Length: 142
Image (cartoon, rainbow, N blue to C red):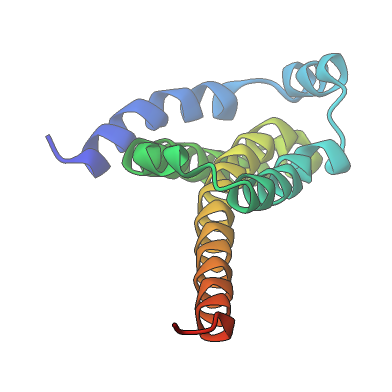
């Protein structure tokens, strides 16, 4: 089965749950979890920060999970954005879409973590190579 079809088959029924729920139910979810616009988009910032730290510390084992992380990221982001748009057009208010925006934000945060970890790890590797070349040139030949 194609991965895009699998993602669509999994996320579509879950999206219908949010779409068919009452605005009072969505508001109850928002108040019980304490979501606000800051908390909705906070995972993106945390994904960038932790990705930078993991890259600087050369935690490269994370890249072994790149393909499964891409599938999870695609599913969360697609589900979150499509459900948020559906909630907005169904109920008329963006703030009711905060739970699904949070899911899209988690998907984007996972992607940001993987990308920044890879970039910072590459830069760290390049800096280590450059410093080793400098020390090789400075050592007296004999």
